[in-house]
Length: 137
Image 1 (cartoon, rainbow, N blue to C red):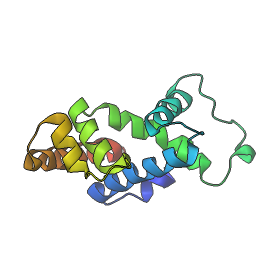
Image 2: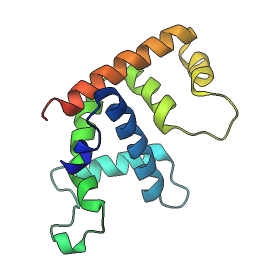
Image 3: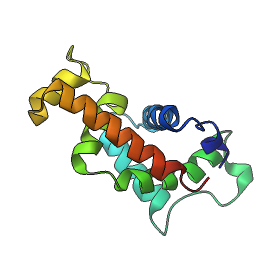
């Protein structure tokens, strides 16, 4: 819950939650593992009923407890987004490819939408993600 309190401005909070998720993926990546692979591993470890979360709080490093508490809420809100909304938010906030294309340019190529439509999808997806993420506060 304390992680959520950092994100009280809903829209900015949703953006910060996505950026936090991106930093978490980078920090937990194993050698040669992509962000998508880390995300799938985290989902399994954090949300699955038999998750590997340490039960002893003394074993958790600083910040890990918050991560384990926050990720199920993050994934719950994320799963309520449509695939196109997930793709747009992922490209804008999580994916950091090495090529010189911006997120919008990559999405125009990938999805075939106009730039303005992609920005509309991002705005709507952020609003929905923020609502789902913070509705229980």
